[in-house]
Length: 252
Ligand SMILES: [Zn+2]
Ligand SMILES: [Zn+2]
Image 1 (cartoon, rainbow, N blue to C red):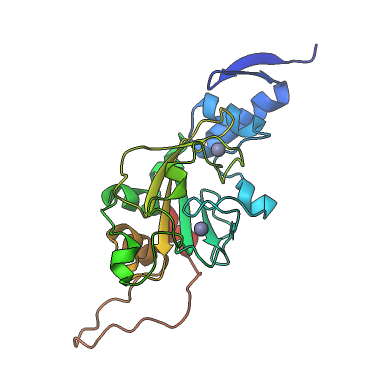
Image 2: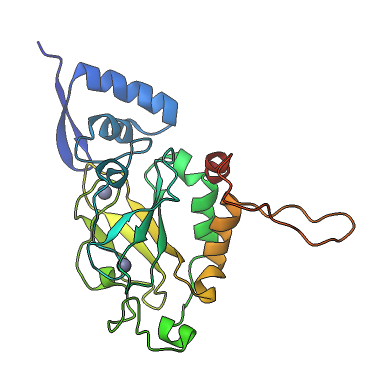
C-alpha cells in the first residue's frame, strides 16, 4: 500500500500521496483555503501557488516584455524578494518606454491575496485611458517602442508567459484596450494559482503614467506620504526608497 489517492485539481487528475494529503491539510489550515487549492499548492512542480517563489525570481532569465515584445525584460532591482504574490520587472530595451512594471496576483483563490491592500487598490482604481506616449512626449516617439504600435505587444501576441509559473499560458483580457499601461492576465496552467494577475507600468518617464490613480495608490502603499504637520508646513518625504514594513503594508 502506497497510500496514494487520485484527486481532481482544476480539472487535472493528480496522484496525492499520504504525505501530500497531510501537507495539503496543514497548508489549508495555515492559509484558510479550500482543500483543492491547498493540494494544488503542495503538488505544484511546474506551477505556482500562494507563498511559492515566482518563476521569474528563481530563473532570473530575460523574457518577452509584455509591452515591446523583445526578450529584454528582467527582474527589477526594486523587486521585493519576500513578496511571493507580486513581482516587479524592468525592460532593458532602450527603445521601450515601459521601464518598471509591477505584476500582482489579485486572485489565487486565497483570502490572503483578496485581503491585500495593493490588490484592493487596483480594484478600486480599475484603470484609465492613457494617451498614446507620442502625444504625451510630443516628440518622435511612436508608442511603447520606437516605430511600433502604441498597443502593448501582449495584446496581439497570443498567450504570454506567466511570471509566476513560467509557462506560456496567460491570456490577456481583451477588455481595456484603451488603457495601454495596464493588462489583466489569466493564467490557464492548471497547476498555477495565478488565476488573475494585473501588470501595470509604474514608470515610463511620463507624468501621465506617474500620476495615474492606480500607480499612485501602489506607490503610496509602499511609501506612504508623511502626515500633514499641525502648523500647515509642507509635507517632506524622507529621501530614498523605503523598504521597512513594505510587505506588511502591501498585505494590508
Ligand atoms: Zn519592453
Ligand atoms: Zn501561471
